[in-house]
Amino acid sequence: MKMLIVAPQLGFTPNGEIVPGGLLNFGRCVARAVASFPGMKKLGVWCQVDMAGSEAYIERMLRVYADDHVELDIRCFGGSQTKLTVAVSQASITRTYDHVMYLLVNQSVLANLPFHLPYSVWEIGRELFEPVSRWKYEALNHANHLLSISKNTSDQAVRNNPGLRPAQIVHLCVEPPLYERELEADPVTQQPFNPAERDPAVLILGNLHREYLYKGHAELIQGWTEVHKACPQAELWIGGDGDGRSVLEGLVKQLPFDVGQQIKFLGRLSDSEVQKYFSRCRVFAMPSRGEGFGLVFVEAARYGVPCIGGKYDSAKEIVLHGETGLLTEQTPHDVASACVQLLSDDVMAKCMGEAGRARYLNNFRYHHFRERLLHAMELDQ
Image (cartoon, rainbow, N blue to C red; front, side, top):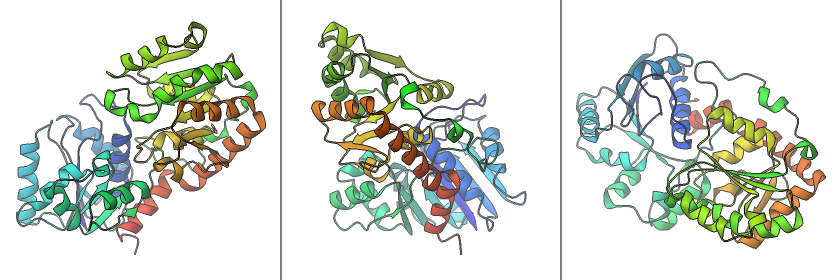
């Protein structure tokens, strides 16, 4: 098998640093899983956005999983769509690869090029929550494999694009270490979760750009007066940054002073800082209205933290209502009520946290994702 993965970005900088982000985490996990296929002879990983100079770090990551005999073809196009298009066209004409995998529907329009190779497409974005363009529809419709990160995303794609077939569901995972194999025992899961010993805090993490404010930040802020009344010491921790932060800060200013004082904007967080806040908070909440998957729920479960999600998006595929957390209507009152339950009931919080951690260990580690992906691609035969 000779496979080419076309990615928007894997998040490596030319000096080896990693850009945070769920899409980038996803791409790196896909590349490693495909590299691990025993029958792989040649693997191309072509990244549209990553800059030249990042290739060595990507190869180092892949070599942890790829056999020594596998030929790696790593290319970073520095944001040039034109250069990527020409390269894909040449690879198709010369039949350099057997199969192309597109990690983004936007890039899959290249499958409409003449003489294109057999290909697969991942459905991962909110772009599928509305009708797609003719060129994207054609690319999706003629793909050899359609893969989706959640049933919700696949269902939305079919609902908004009549005639499109359902995708195969491949749930995501927590990313393993970059340059070593996943440990058999995850050390994070050895950390106890004792609600009474945690800060009385609800954590939300996510991009704060205006187009991402569907994630539930506003509902949490608007409902915090109700939370404060029941749990006066409780704090709301908001991690992330973006041009929508000023909108949220404006909502905080509308609250009574003593309530607003309990809402903390943490700014952009490093990986180590994210781990610190997961280790300290009592509840994770992201009552989103349009989550494609919601990897942060899996990350919270890894730390044994019970979760609050929305009822109507992909959160329900990760958070089991009444078992590993609470799924709520996306209104300030309902979100506040869920927060109060988990902030004030130690037994409930501990039981749900432990159940969430068990669900992570049984379903959302890297080796689970690898097995799901190779099976969906018929590479486990």
